[in-house]
Image 1 (tube, rainbow, N blue to C red):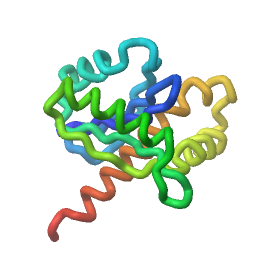
Image 2 (tube, rainbow, N blue to C red; image 1 turned 90 degrees about the vertical axis):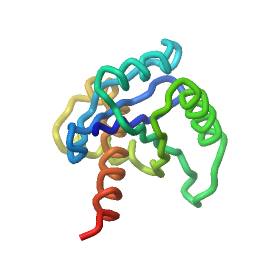
Image 3 (cartoon, rainbow, N blue to C red; image 1 turned 60 degrees about the vertical axis):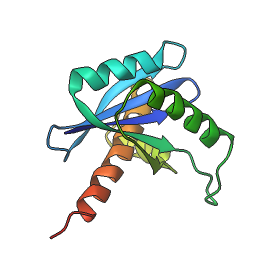
Image 4 (cartoon, rainbow, N blue to C red; image 1 turned 45 degrees about the vertical axis):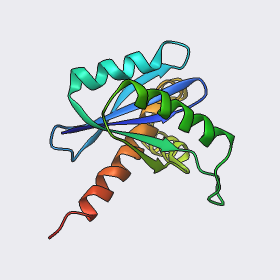
Length: 139
């Protein structure tokens, strides 16, 4: 039961995937928005046997939805038309900032941070989902 997470930006989409047990998040790279991203995502879903897609929703700091959130909803709608895999939205506020801090503390060079920040942010989004799933599991 793998879960795929997406950090949908204007130029790139960061990807992360869980392990088969759905407990660990791992960055999976990025897809450029102008490079048929939905087809790439559908192929990953098939190849990795994904059972759920988590989409980071860029909510404003005051909790309102803005233009970027509308664009993410539209992207998710287009993706949902191409697959029967359930899509779940997760508040992604400050995940890119968190990813940047994490990579700086790991002494990742600036060029490498630029290349992988979106997939690390997607992994943070996925970790939020995995924690939420665990907290809803009956004891």
